[in-house]
Image (cartoon, rainbow, N blue to C red; front, side, top):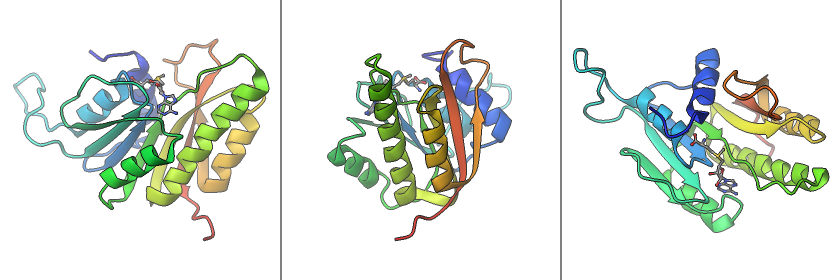
Length: 196
Ligand code: SAM
């Protein structure tokens, strides 16, 4: 089983768009308690027939996970604890990549919500901007970003930001995300390189 049902959201997104492939380098933002990392790990685990599909040997792929909170270790997943909004943390994450370009960034990060619509939209937008900035610096040209966003006053702005950075942008609300929740996901594919 998974640590949280959140795993099924990423699984649905992956099954619909085929984003996760063996051998990739994936960054999991807002990873705790770790269900997305568990799903990613399973995608990268070599399986042997007749052994119940148990993972053996080296992982075919690399996962770097980050969260504000502690996360119980997952074998094969490199974890960094820290606030993605802090430059030192973003730098630590960058260093852990050792210069390798990233195939996929997945972000299930959600800020603490105040209930004040404009404040919350600004907090969500800030996390999205930082994720997009990270993609500009580290994502492969044909890489992708999956990020949680929320319906509401800020939604069009999030969509616009995605379109500024990706040639293809798809909104997707997995069935595993409760109908009444405002949560939904944007998937950006094929990076537009920002003029430098
Ligand atoms: N995808 C996870 C899973 O499958 O287990 C669930 C993620 S949970 C919905 C959102 C996470 O985002 C929380 O663990 C929270 O601590 C993290 N988060 C929110 N803001 C963050 C930030 N600024 N930096 C790092 N993590 C953050």
